[in-house]
Amino acid sequence: MRATLAAITSAMALALMLPPVAGAETFTLEPTDVTEWKAVYARIEARDRIPARARLGGTLVELSVTEGDLVESGQKLARIVDEKLDFQMNAIDAQLQALNSQLVNAQSELSRGEELLQRGVTTVQRLDGLRTQVEVLTNQIEATRAERRVLEQQVSEGTVLAPLSGRALDVPVAAGAVVAPGESIATIGGGGFFLRLAVPERHAGTFREGDTIQIETDETVEGKLARVYPQIENGRVIADVEVEGLDDAFVDARVLVRLPVDTRPALLVPQDAVETVSGLDFVTITEGGEPVRRTVITGIHHMVDGKDMVEIVTGLEGGEDVVTNDE
Image: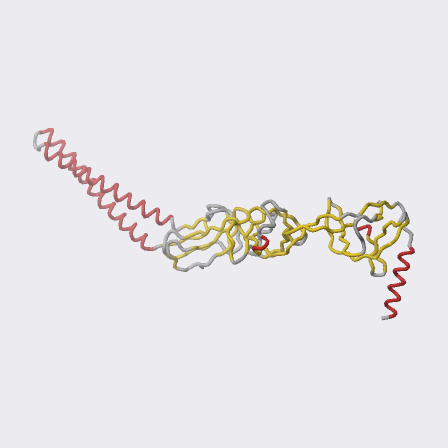
């Protein structure tokens, strides 16, 4: 212990005896307001999360999407088949064939009736009855064709399409499953991605929409507080943060976010004004026109106007002249 104290004392004495760096300049140390940041976790979420639902009940015979796939709006995701519709269409086709045969026969009867009327063999009333029969059969055929178009529309609704462009977040079914109308086949997330965070309600009045937010990823990037929701849930305020180039590979992934919650005064000096000797930090000041090295305890770093500034916790006071290297 005595040897350690002696080494520290020697280092301090040596540092105090070191001459100042050539080409130095001074500035008066004044308190500067710095931002207090609160670290919270946010989740990557899609702005729109829409399920692609089945419009037809039946068997899922084809599924062409899995979790994580990128899809385009209107892209085919799955196909559902209801075999009963095929049987109904076959029955309608048979009805159409029968009605067409009856119509051909009725039209032939109408043609013969018109010839007989010209000869005076038949009556006008008989001819009107034949015309009515042709019209009835024609209308029946049109009605049956309309029923068939309804079935064709139902069959086409067996194709499940992507409701928007984005990424498939969840596919809860598998090929071969029996699905009901309205059941979700896949959930698509799109419309852009953002960070959603929950902050304790005691900080509700400390941030506003448009505030700059720091996001800790591989490197520190900045985002903008886009929306603060007015309803407090479970004692927390919900807010959305917009970030350019946000990685959407993992939706609901947690990301460390730092929020500005308060400001406080601090003494800041440029990083190059701090010298480290034998594990101790020194800052050179001027006293009576002479340079003196003062032992300090440094804090966290702050970026001020693009310059790296370090906070001095103890060792200096406001109003002192600090010597910095002019490089």
